[in-house]
Image 1 (cartoon, rainbow, N blue to C red):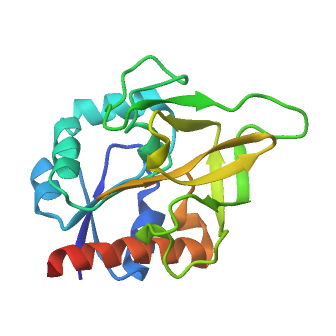
Image 2 (tube, one colour):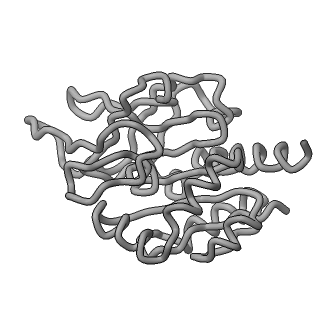
Length: 211
């Protein structure tokens, strides 16, 4: 089974992510060791909480460069929720610079009548990269589970793999570029659809190993 390093920086829902990966046919390895990231077949960056503490924890554990090296190497990489947001340059939620792997900023939902912030619960994706491996074996507009008040705004719209609409605001729900994939929703909380997305990621890892 492929070994997927799950980055531990005190900001992730590690238990449910690891259970999801096991069900998807992978062996998760929770770690904050750069050597373990380098040895793994793929890397998953989870995240729950606020932007500034997240990037501070990553940097205090010397994980910024290993994450950049992982993505640059072509190894499959999946970010989840806050693990998507910290790939960007900056956030309206804080003052710390993000990792800057993706050009763009993290913004906050605008208050408007009839919507809740945080955007919380099930919502339907509008897939914008239908050929992305993330969406294989899924219905055309899958329902997934969100919990967030902030969202990413990439400068390059081509990197968007899916959007979601909350009130009148349509925002980026997933990005994909070559080996780098990241989602704003929680696959590990998204029932069978989420498990299929994790299985799709694991399938890509297997293909990479076989190649």
